[in-house]
Image (cartoon, rainbow, N blue to C red; front, side, top):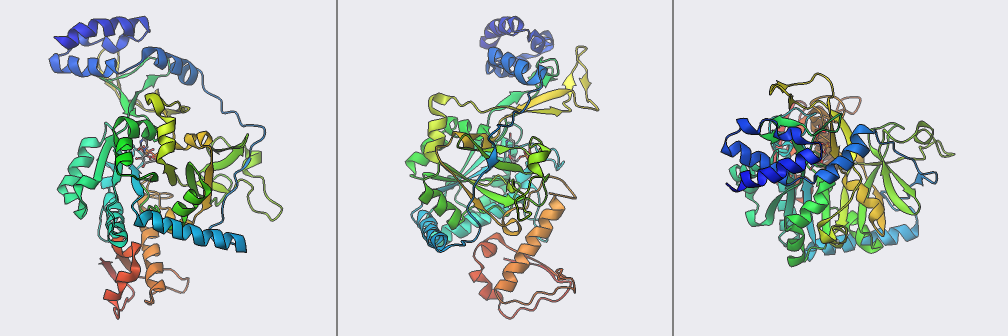
Length: 474
Ligand code: UTP
């Protein structure tokens, strides 16, 4: 059998690299198990993994903060000077034109494991709709439909999955009939995986016939776009502009004309939305510059003296936090991944990873026992010849669903969706019931198409919203 022939070579390579433990249970495996394990191991580069183990696992990498670190400049959410007003007007027009001539495609990263949310199944299938229970994917799909209708052009939506959720994600879309979208215009592609290391740098087995594999971080998007053929498709369909957002943020501005237009007009290779941080230690990456390059320093890595430093007017110096919303030029992805290789730094995370011990028993650790390595999309920023950062508005752009309750949770996300919808209704002339403190006393959930294009609200003209109302308006 082919795989067992190869397995000898693989076993020799694994042993030579000091990773022979991955074959510990080979003799107990049936054909299918052997095929699975040898397939996983054949995809590894032991030399590189051992270098990574030495650099990131056995040693704990130190983040060095460049001496010339400065806050990154950004465009304000609203123009302040005459020049800015002119530029923003042009940007709005340019963004609109990009959409009208079909130059923009959408990219959702949905390969993560969503461990904090603790939900069985892909995060995109999570029922986030505050009244309807519609899924995160349905929110995005509704916005795509609205854009197709409004701009009269098909829009291709790329969805990155991972080994842990690819099949379930595809099945979900099939079951939901692609939410009425053209299935030909939805392309799923799968990101790469990384094996988990024990703290001694040895690869862990998650089962006797399997390494402990997990998605390689959203930085894996870039290479996966090339390897999957998505990049070629973007060339074929002539969509040079990629709107990038995360599956756990149903407020993500997927088709924001100003953001798209400023990206185009400034000639940026990668652009980002920034949100003003609410406190020095808010858990958002910090937009900074060093040596003329934009970079993100994670909140946990920004030293206190910088995090807390203030401008003369009392505002935070390092105020720009990242909600992970980007516009990326297709040619930039092609340049970065030319030759099928891309080197982004790895980030270490200490995790509790179930593993098979020497005796062949599955151990579920109580405390972190393993190291996972991930790369992050924002590490592409310093590699861009030009970047553009635009200030965004939290209440209309960022409702992350990381946890079940509390900060950045499904609960807070639902509240933000309802608040956003109430604001849309009020802007459209509806009277929304509120208590003395200004808090909503009714829950009206707008369908994503209505939220994207409130002109459709004329259908509801004359409807009264009384305290306690709980409805979905589509
Ligand atoms: P997070 O870093 O919040 O990770 O991902 P997560 O997997 O969703 O949740 P936790 O940390 O396990 O609780 C931010 C975004 O990046 C995507 C996620 O799907 C989410 O949209 N992502 C993350 C990937 O697509 N691939 C990855 O390998 C990691």
